[in-house]
Length: 92
Image (cartoon, rainbow, N blue to C red; front, side, top):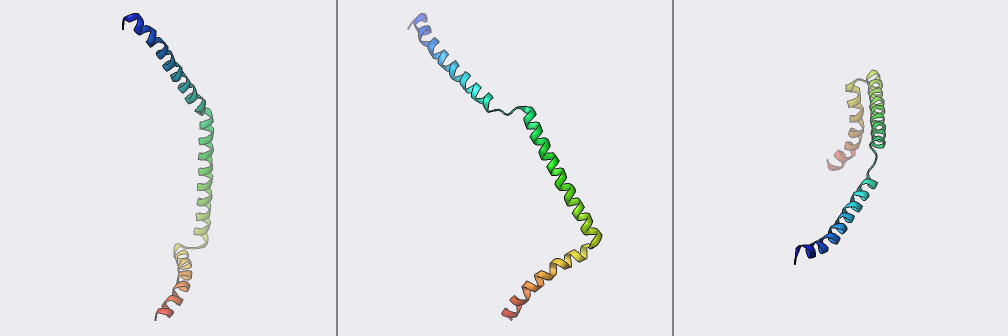
């Protein structure tokens, strides 16, 4: 195959490849989310996390001012004791 013949074959192939590449790039660009929109979404997440952390801190402060850590632990222990009593009576 001579140079001009090879060029006649390659030019249409190159155009098809270029067309496919252009189509793929266009699809990728269409699928992208704009940066400003992402920033707004992420700012919303940050605000929501900060609100939740503030609420947890308020609950912890309120709990700490009413009950000591010892009282909280004992509070959790009482239901466990009630659950374990029937098991120990049935086994013993």
